[in-house]
Image (cartoon, rainbow, N blue to C red):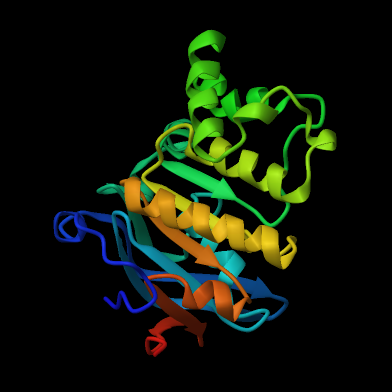
Length: 245
């Protein structure tokens, strides 16, 4: 693993022993009329706790398919995805939903916040869905909003927030359950350069202190180069890109 683009972390050695995400022979084939279309073909992938991995590739290369499989939103044609040592294939639909809520955080290019809820209520929602009392869920959500620099905006609704502020709320919501895996799809793609830079700094801080793995799909070379590793999806498989000098 290359840390060229990162400031070394003192706990790197201990985290290296914890594999949070592993894909084995991951294959996804779709039926397209009379023929089969293989999007992912025997893909292998391992990501350690605290590690940030960028996935790049041309449009149509299968990046969205890969994210859907990693998040348990789709099933592979062959192979398996393991998160925190648990194979998603071993879970029924109900257990998979609970596992996803507990172990996986999602951040998209568009925040998907509920317009009628405040930032605090949006961030607390995954815990409320899990069955936690509202007061406890909102206490935890307030901690995360403070961590992402949104404490003074907790009672504002999405329409009252800037694009960068809404993305910070979305990150707080994704982290509120202490996930094992963070899946991020173009997390800075809809932001101006200054706001995107602040989100990158926030991701640095979170990666340094969190025990989860990060998989970040992006078309942005700058965002990709900022991560620990860059993997290119090509021909249904992942190829590690050389580190930037």
